[in-house]
Amino acid sequence: MAIKIKTPEQIEGIRESSKLAGTTLKYLEQFVIAGNTTKFIDTKAEEFVRDHGAIPATKGYNSYPAATCISPNDVICHGIPNNYEIKDGDIVNVDVTTILKGYYGDTCRMYSVGTISEYAQKLVDAAKECLQIGLGQCFTGNQFGNIGFEINKYATSLGYSVVYEFCGHGVGIKFHEDPQVDHIAPKNSGPVMKPGMIFTIEPMINAGKARAKVDKKDKWTARTIDGKLSAQYEHTILITDEGYEALTNVYNEY
Image (tube, rainbow, N blue to C red; front, side):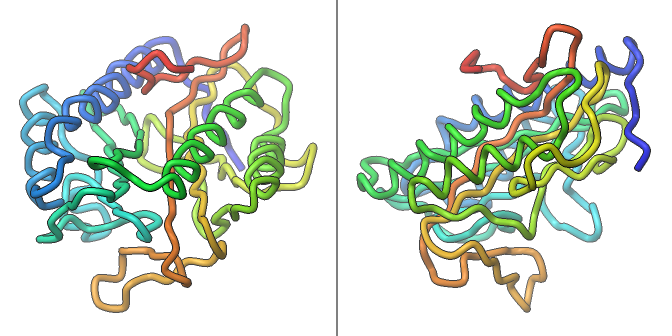
């Protein structure tokens, strides 16, 4: 495993791209509402990204057809935007990766449409807390496995499961780089974090079973096997001498 240590110039470029990715999610708040289709939201995201001098990384990536991944309710990840009309009570994940001046920024968040159930709200809150817990393990000298160990410990304590078939990853110069960042892992396992490493943490938390099933027709959309809800948050993270910087965090929550 060759984990790239980014140069100061690369870090600044990745920081700019990451900020745009986060800002795109903020911009989309006005469009993730009942009555809009996921395809419409995707169109608005692509317009915004391109208007800011960037391109959407997912479009054309391994033949993926859209500018974003939009995953409502029981869709875990990689939902292809289509004619699904969002309705009151839905929880929707939007995942955006931008390429700005050759640098990548990758982030996702949940949107609650109208009034959601307490059941859904608790899951969304847990997924957000799982990201926070993962961030708490980001510091020089720690091992990557502790991210997944602590996330899984918390999620399962609430009766939820953590998806193990998808993971976080290095990012910045390429869409996917080393290391693989697992959200379930043994304690004190994996490579050691060093300043200049950039990667994503993106835990997918299921209300039911952890397994995913990928749509046989589109070969992308991953759903829960039991039809129960799934929620996810993601940031692009830089390891620093002092700890970490969440490069996609435009909401100043972490």
